[in-house]
Image (cartoon, rainbow over all chains, first blue to last red; front, side, top):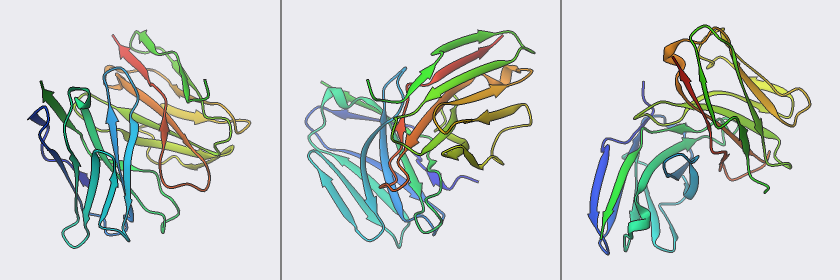
Amino acid sequence: DQQVKQNSPSLSVQEGRISILNCDYTNSMFDYFLWYKKYPAEGPTFLISISSIKDKNEDGRFTVFLNKSAKHLSLHIVPSQPGDSAVYFCAAGSFLSGNTPLVFGKGTRLSVIA
Amino acid sequence: DTGVSQDPRHKITKRGQNVTFRCDPISEHNRLYWYRQTLGQGPEFLTYFQNEAQLEKSRLLSDRFSAERPKGSFSTLEIQRTEQGDSAMYLCASSPLVNTGELFFGEGSRLTVL
C-alpha cells in the first residue's frame, strides 16, 4: 500500500526549460510535504517543503504546488540546469499525528540535457 | 563537519554473517531515524528514536533487525544472519524535536550480501 506515489520513474528536460515532477498521496492525515534530491552515492538532501495550509511555496528556481482536494503536489524547476540532474523524492508526514516519520515515494530521475 | 555521519560506507559480507552499522547524528538533534533504500525504491522507514527511547520498531523488517541508541547520541543498526535480500543502502537521518519536518540524512551505508 503506497501512501506516496511518484508515477513517473524518469523525466528528461532540455536545459533552460521547466521541469515538472508530480506526486500523489492517499493518506488524508498528511499535513506537510517535502521534496528531497539525491545524487548517486549520497544521502537525500532537503530541497523544499510545503505545509497543508498553503498551496504554493517558492524558493528560487524551485516551486512546490499543493492541491489538497486532489491529494496531489508538484515540484517545478525553472529554468532547469544540468546540475539539477538527480533523483527527486516526494515525502509526506503528519504533525497532527505526532510528527510521524516521513513516507517517501519511489522517486523520479530527472535528466537535464544541455 | 557537523552533518550526520555513517560508518561503514560500504560493507560486503557473506550470507549468514552479522553486520552492524553506526550512525552519529547532528549533535543537537533529539530524533534519529533509520531507513532502507533498495534499487528503484524510495527510502523505507525502519525505526526511530527520540533521545534513547525507541518510539517505533514495528517496521523493522524481521526479528533479525535491531537498533539501539543507548545514550541518546549515536545509534547502531544490527542485522543478524544476513540474507541476500538484505542487500540495500541503509540510511540514517536526524532531526530536532521541534522542527519543520525536515530530516537530515547521512550518506548511507551500502550493504552487499554475497
